[in-house]
Length: 364
Ligand SMILES: O=P(O)(O)OC[C@H]1O[C@H](O[C@H]2O[C@H](CO)[C@@H](O)[C@H](O)[C@H]2O)[C@H](O)[C@@H](O)[C@@H]1O
Image (tube, rainbow, N blue to C red; front, top):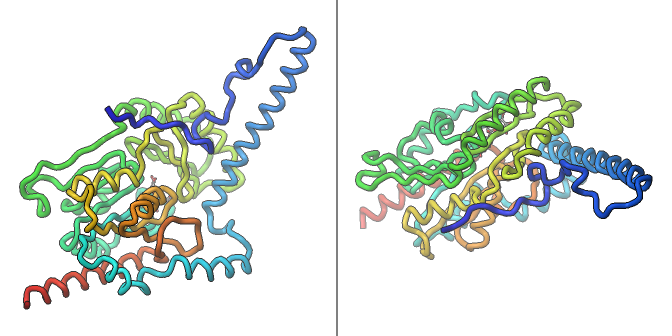
């Protein structure tokens, strides 16, 4: 049987950086006087280290805010090499189409920041009607999946298109189009939930996080079924360290959960070997493209968690990733788009190109 349990990453995984029991860090017995001095020192060190670790969380939280990006000349330098190395997918449209010739394009779309603009209230991140219409047309041309950190039901309620594949909770909750829907007339719908054993733990941690963080104004905990989000977009920056400490205090008792970070959000999820990249591979397999060389997957996303999918495409040497960002970022994506409106333009052009090529073929 395949095991999904992975080693906890070294950076900011839950509890990993905290020594919860200082006694366990003590080694051989020593004379009583010596023990009390070294224990005191040890505790001081632990406090300093724990403080440093919370600071590194806060640095990481700051790094997710564009207002904390580098100075202007440095941005200009970065911008130059960024444009060179990650050109606009709109400018490169013809080259992209050329590269896909003779291959089946499969589309993977992240939701927040890709199909809908980033807003302060996560419950109001609506997708425009124009975008929905575009995605509906896109799905008629190519197999299309939504891959989101949100829980599957929630992202479905925003997108509202039954003909798509959905991978919610960072890919830990995958479902294909319903049997009988436009894009699935006959086959049973796929359903894959590799983290279901974690559900009770996630619910427990959700309740604890709501309770622990309620003293921090603006903090919001979102239950995404197989993972959780602690939003700090509306938290005063002076309180970020306090919030990080609160989250850390809850997670220290849950070594099977790890913490990653998105756009002004701390994301808590099981330590299983599963992410948006694995979800992409799973979906390609479900669609019958497991070992095909004639498939061309395109993944569009704006967040750090989308990097797992960009990396898979780069490693497979198939298709490519498009990062949605106005700022230069470290990425495994090949191209860039600045914002959801540009994503919509790109998707429209793909639809137009496909419709034109189908018309041309039917005339031949
Ligand atoms: O994988 P995604 O679909 O991009 O989901 C990642 C997180 O997206 C949501 O949060 C982000 O968008 C919110 C609405 O615009 C914004 O308020 C928040 O600051 C962003 O981080 C979602 O609410 C999270 O649960 C997802 O993890």
